[in-house]
Length: 481
Ligand SMILES: C[S@@+](CC[C@H](N)C(=O)[O-])C[C@H]1O[C@@H](n2cnc3c(N)ncnc32)[C@H](O)[C@@H]1O
Ligand code: SF4
Image (cartoon, rainbow, N blue to C red; front, side, top):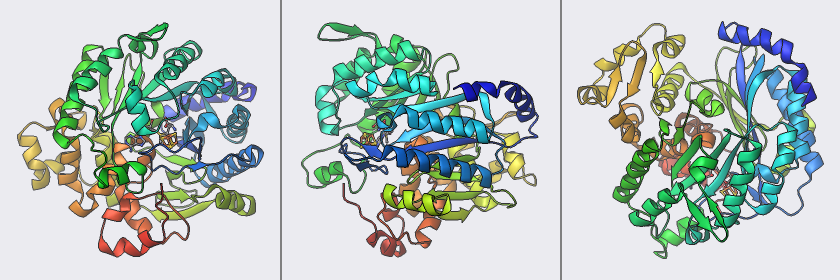
C-alpha cells in the first residue's frame, strides 16, 4: 500500500488531466480461476484444484499485467477488479504484490476502486482483514440466496449463517463499500418465498444472530436472474426434468417486485441488475457500461483496449487453462489467445447494448466520440427504434439516449430488436446478464472468436446457439461441468 500512497502527487496531477481527457485511462480486470467447489449453475472459467501454485500464479499475474499495460495506451488505471472463480481463495500477498506492481509501473489513481469478489465461507471471511491490508477497498459478496434449500440446489459451499457473518465482518472493514450478489428464479423458488427473502434483507435471524442486511450491506446490491447454462449440472438437471427453473412470467414478476422493494428501501436502479444508495455505484462496471477501455489479466480474462500504435480497439481473450496460461506468460510475457479488432459498427453496437442498460443511457458526447458524422438523434429515424420512441420506452433529450423507467424493465427485448440478429441473441443475453464478466465477451466478439478456433478446452458455452457453422468450434470445447 505504501507504493500506492507514494503516487499521490502524481495522482493529483493525472486526475486533472483525466478530466481534461488528455490522458488515456483504463481499468484492470484480474481473473483468479480457482474455486473450492463447482456450483451447479456456473459456467465461468474456473477450476477446482487442491494444489494451486500461489507463487507461480503471483509471478505470472504480475508479469502479464505489466506486459498488457505496456501494450496498451493506458497512462492511468482507475480501477482494479479481482473476479473469478473465487479470488478470495488467493493469498492476499498475491494481490498486494500485483497492486504494488501496477502502482510502480503505471499510475494507479489515488482513488482507484479496488474490488474483489468474496465467497462467504468462514475461512474467506476470516481473510478479509488481510485483503484490506493488501489494498482491496471494496468487496462484492456472493450470498446468492438467504434460503438454505436454495444454497443447496445452487451447490454453494457456505451456509446462510456464514453469509451473515461474512457480511458483518465486511461491513466493519469496508464501510459503505460492501456489495451483495443475489440470484432469483432458482428451482423451487416461489413468488412467496422470494417476497419473504426480500423481507429478510430487512431483518433476518439465524440462530443467535439477527442481521439487518440492508443496514449492514447498505449501499450496493446486484440482482441476477438464474441463467441455465449449457454444460452445467443444473442444465442436465433441468433437461432431464429433475428440476424446473422459474418460467419467464414468474422471473419477470420476481424482478419487478424486487425493483419495487429495493426502490422503497432507498436503492436506485442504476443498471438493470445493479442497485445503489448515495451514489455508491460500482466504478469498475460503470467504466464498462460507458464504453471505457479495460485490460484483462489472468486465465480466460477478457479485455478491450486500443494498443499503442494501433488505430482500432481490440477484443482480447487470455488462454483459458491456468496451466497453459502460466506457461505462455513465462515464455512470452502474456497469455493472449485471441485478438479481434473491433470495427466502428461493432463498437457503436456495444455502446448501445451496454449503455442502454444504465439509467443514464448513452450521452451525445460518448456517441460522438465514436461517431462524429451521425448524431445519436438520427437513430430515431430507424424503424427498429421507432416503436420504442413512440411508446415512450426510449427517450432522447439534450443529455442523450436512454430507456425510460418502464423501458428498463424490458431493455433486453429492446436491445435485441434494435441491434442484434436473432440467432445471436442467446450469446448477447449471456453477455449482458453477467454484466461483470460477460461484457468481456460481447456478442460480436464471440461471433468473431469462433472463427479463430481455440485449440484448448473452453468454457464459453453460449456461442453454441449462434449458428450451425459454429459446430466445429463447439466440438473442440470441453463442456463438462
Ligand atoms: C462467477 S461469480 C464469481 C464470484 C464468486 N465465486 C461467487 O460465486 O460468489 C459472480 C456472480 O455471478 C453470478 N452468476 C454466476 N453464474 C450465474 C448464473 N448462471 N445465473 C445467474 N447469475 C450467475 C452470481 O451471482 C455470482 O455472484
Ligand atoms: S459461482 Fe463462484 S464459487 Fe461457484 S463455481 Fe462459479 S465462480 Fe466458483
